[in-house]
Image (cartoon, rainbow, N blue to C red; front, side, top):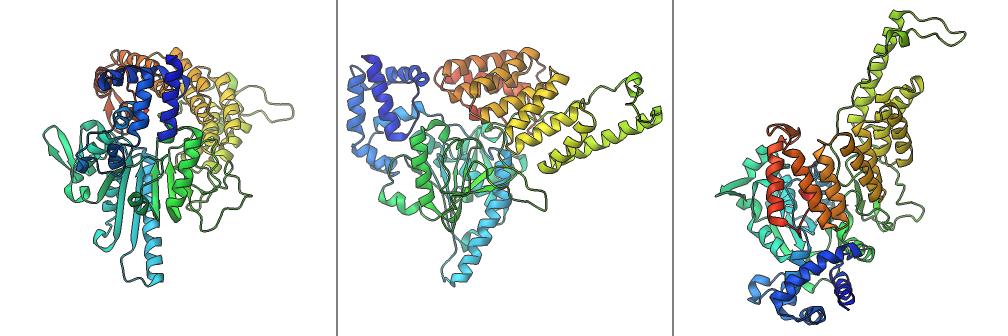
Length: 549
């Protein structure tokens, strides 16, 4: 009977807020409900279910749903207490470096220029409008990052009618966002120059600069439910919607419903950006896919998109004169890019092995020259890969593999280029060939784990990560990646176990070792983060978003 009551409440949660409640999530839900039963004084789960149903129509729910929680003077509804414990609210500034670079350097300038041109063409006496919505804004770092990006573009605030709005279902997260006060961990991907420029110390925290703080607004909103009249008025003609790392918690029906809502909210040619793999397998035919090296972007078209266009196989857009390039990242949580190890030098006997019949016998000098040419070609292919000229890198690496089937570096370059263009089958085949040359190579197992996650095969992704740990038990990042995969499955006990193992591994490494060259994060930084997280969040909270890129 208790199991049936638990599933009944799980269904009510999914129906009202879209949170996906799988069988693996039920133990965590049961633990949360046990705490809420004690607090509310409910005798059992059936009584708590009735409380939720009644609370759904309460004045507290309605006022807080309209963003009036503070003004109403009413105590928070039980739904808000429950959702605070079920949802994970952790974010940080300039999250996902590549996506944010795309937003700041390409999309925002394009939107601003287009809106200015439209305003002039309409001969409108008012100001041009800019509307940006962070849906599922958590504690507000994403929206403030957008405001900072606009400031860095010397955006003329006074000349525009601007709305930067963040919405979330967690009143606790929205309170933090409205305060604009953050600890050091929220700045783990932030350029120190920007941090000093836009934040002011306040005791042990940092406060967003007041002029930036005044540019944003935060409001309660449930993406699954219909907006109230005031919210619907605000969330119209949006130029850019950010909804990243939200859909991983939604069921398919809630995702489809929310996508339709987003399309209606977007202005023509407005953009939607999600996490890299969050819409995998979803019908996105109502949008036009724009392909960039950093990410796929969904755009509301001026006219209905052609049914002939396949959302699963978008036609890549050429950028900056480069060959057509794909843009789907292999993972929503990119693993660290490692340098490609140099292959061992071939022995003199190999260099001087007998040529094929009818071919001239090469001299030692000509063999050395051929080796130098090969190294130069590898360097060229690496440069193409680094510059995201994937089509070019594929051609160059294929030529090298044809010339020398045992060229390990060429295989790795080719596999990465295929993966970064969404061509998973050839990428996996190349990885297998390369592993036959170097079975213990960690890079290839990481890449295969990324591809498996992209394809939705989390069990296979976990298998590759376990192989990495077997090969090198000092690879603490693999434990954290496993924790992230278990988080997607809501297996909180396994998340905690993996984070403990990561911490145990870190304790074996020198404190000052830099483990993330981009941010300068050291073993000591990671150790402190995990110790704090495990101490305060056990057993009900763990977050893939807390893991540095």
